[in-house]
Image: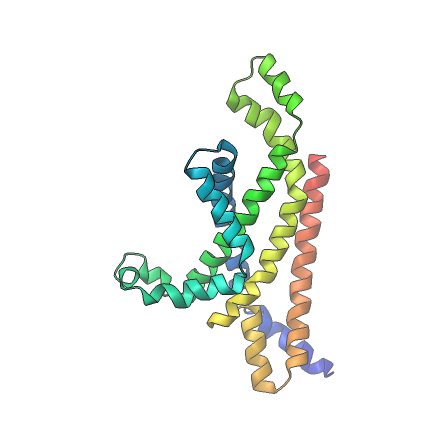
Amino acid sequence: MNWDLLLSFVPQLLAGLPVTLSILVCSLAIGLVLGALLCWARMRRAPVIAPAADFYVLFFRGTPLLVQLFAIYYGLGQFEVVRDSFAWPLLREAWFCAVLALGLNSAAFTSEIMRGGIIGVERGQIEAAEAYGFSRLQIARLVLGPQALRIALPAYSNETILMLKGTALASTISIMDLTGIARKLSALHFAPFESFIAAGGIYLVLAMVLTLSYSAIEKRLA
């Protein structure tokens, strides 16, 4: 392995770091908001909304992320109604399609993580809060929310790291993120080993930073 070549790739790969992080942050934001709505719908068990939310979670958890990404980026443009809609200027952009695909996928897993955290809180504590005359909002804010957060946080940290690794798929639709630049360097210099080892090292550092950050939050909540 050519270590000098590998080290020379690092500054070039870091140019794709803002793209990778922007996709990660935006997709997690979409996943968090939509996941909370899905969790609420599934916990409420409304006649129509709950089955639809269950199917959404089943679909996005049961199909590959790469297939979802290709379906959004390549598939939606096949429909004239989509091309004529107000959303087409966004849907024809690779970056937005990557964020949308990852965000929709993350929402399914996030809703299940939230649901598990809520179910994990002992029912007796909620009943005790009701006996003290707490409102539903107070129970959610003071009893249910903090404990569910502690239960769900380790699983959500894993979801964040999975989404970080999932951003590498964005390179398959011509986005110049970390992996996209690694593929370009590999083709230019005929050095796939060095380019992807350097990219993997950057992903590893990012994953370590996320892991330490979530560990610090977990210790504070404990």
